[in-house]
Length: 500
Image (tube, rainbow, N blue to C red):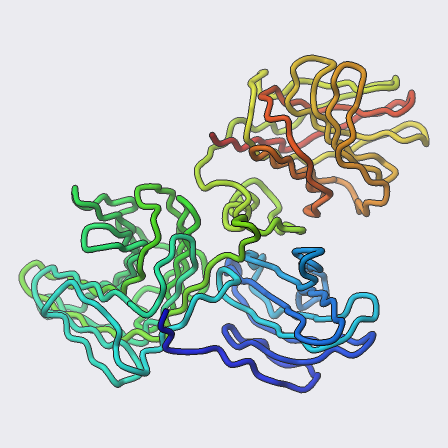
């Protein structure tokens, strides 16, 4: 792989300063100290942060806080025990703000570290800044490429023409985040202003690619090209995040399986689900004329950057913390972070359910009209009223076959939590803990059942994972009394997202 640009870490002194995208920072943590960096980001931007220890016994801890000093998210040891480095990958910025990144050492460890912030995913594939000879391949002989300018200058004339310049210096990718700076673009259509620019993805030849385009009216579209022709997946449509008439902007695309997300100056503006093309392919720069009789367009592109997900044994890193607060944002976040596939749909949604039980044991009600589920994502918000001081709480039933065969995820008033599979009168060991900081009501359940593994989150924090039985079954809400107590549980906004 030929790279036209290499990231050079910047060695800095310990101080509060600005953290820039694509500019890694090398610094040092001494015992019981921390360093802070600030960055500005718009709501909806997807960013990754990586802290790698480079010397000493440093076990880095990474924390992000907002301008009000509220902790947004943190990480320590994303691949323990193989690595003690920190990673926050493909997190969605919850609001437009100036944020602070704090790097500290766990348990008085110290040493040098490298901190990186990247748009999209955390593994840098390469950046093409077009400072050298243009390593591009065009599908149109009349396309004019201008080398030696520090930019890719593309120009095209003729009625309703499209030109694609494939960037050969970037290794073909299947799952990736790509962004390119459009430094300037202009066009004419019978004397009137008009142009189209964009990028291709997963392009293997002239008849196999996806195409994202933006036009002079602030509209966008997305299509897929195959030997059978072009299929419009989303026709021209406006979005408030796309500035009408802008001639200088950054265009971004995230691809993960069948899911595609699109960004204008870092702000999310659209999503498409399609699985026509899945093989790795190249990224191409696109210009298109708009005139049916005559037309011309010229554009200058710079700094095409491509990142890919950090994988462990071929799998995405399981997030320790989630930022989504409702079904829409959680599904979007979990898709981007590789925890669920792009394809899926809402199986059911229950605004409110109520369970009350005065005796010891588990009492439940069935949700979703008794439908059975295999792979799914479940979210719910719960409040409780418990008369007594013993351990009691609320739970979600999964894979239920009958009253004595099911999986139970629960949370108690004393901070206990767990997931256990019941077979007859026996509750098998699964996930269990007693010191979960649950905060104030309502409490958020999130359960992911994916293949052979179940993941359990409480208030957005990973409580644990365990092997799953892969048995389809019904879902319900429940009271969980470890001794006779008067317990009532109110579940709100319970929903299930399922896939095959």
